[in-house]
Amino acid sequence: MSPDTDSRIRRHTVDANGLSFECLRVGDGDRLALCLHGFPDDAPSMAPVMSNLADAGYTAVAPYMRGYGPTDPAPDGDYSATALGQDAVALKTALAERFDVDDAYLVGHDWGAVAAYAADRVDPEAFERMATMAVPPGFDALLQKHPRQLLRSWYMWFFQVPDVPERALRWRDFALVEFLWGTWSPNWDYPDSRIREVKETFRAEGTVEAALQYYRDIVGSSISSLVRGDWPSIDDVPPIRTPTLVLSGEQDGCIGPALFDHADEIIEDCRVVRVRDAGHFMQQEKPEVVSEEIISFFERS
Image 1 (tube, rainbow, N blue to C red):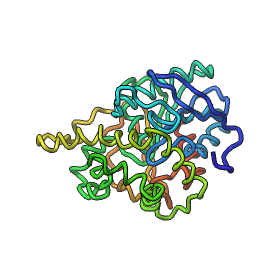
Image 2 (cartoon, rainbow, N blue to C red; image 1 turned 90 degrees about the vertical axis):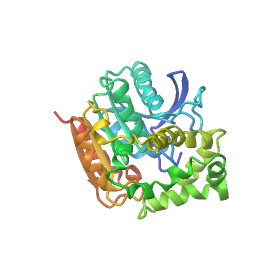
Image 3 (spheres, rainbow, N blue to C red; image 1 turned 180 degrees about the vertical axis):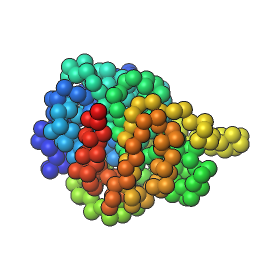
Image 4 (cartoon, helix red, strand yellow; image 1 turned 60 degrees about the horizontal axis):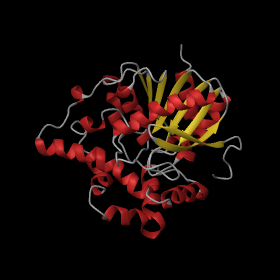
């Protein structure tokens, strides 16, 4: 981990949903905060928020998602949103037992947000509250209302091409990762140590292939819907019943902020916050602001 990472963070291996997850933990509070990372990223990206959660009385745990770095790949090759949601619920159960906590909360960034929405469909009682960052609920359905997002999401369509994206990700020591970080968070002067750490995660055997399969599993079904002419509308999106804070960066170059305007049409109990002067990786760009919003929402009466 980066040299400025909280020295309290410890590593654990946790078995859940048939996989062995490598996890980072900080804090020993009486509430669990499960923190899920996105792409192209890894578990230490959640460290700044985890430290603040620990200070607020939570046991904060961030696993490397399935297929990333030291965590097991999916034995059945399943990287669908449903599988991610099942992972989140199973991790909650395993971690609550391991650390003897009752109430559990979920924080998800990017693919971690996708996992959070899916976890609600798997078990809406699993988490007391959730906080999601950088990806709105019902993303596929929102493309009809916001067709410009199709251009912003060019990489998702590119990742459907066989074999080429694997080479593109590894090209020139993962230059594409740096390009995406710079495009998605244009005003973030990210630490060299952080990008080196993420590249090291992606060098682990199978990580590149797993990370791309996430997109192939979810986007492939969307393309099939488009071909069939039954692209979902926002009315087709199942409601999210877990109270959820949805955060978006005002300067996000990946997903347009306007897509988050519809969150309260899908989430029954919802608060939407725009994080000023932040892009896609807001939990690292503005950790104090993001943490304050999350903790306030989690502790709302």
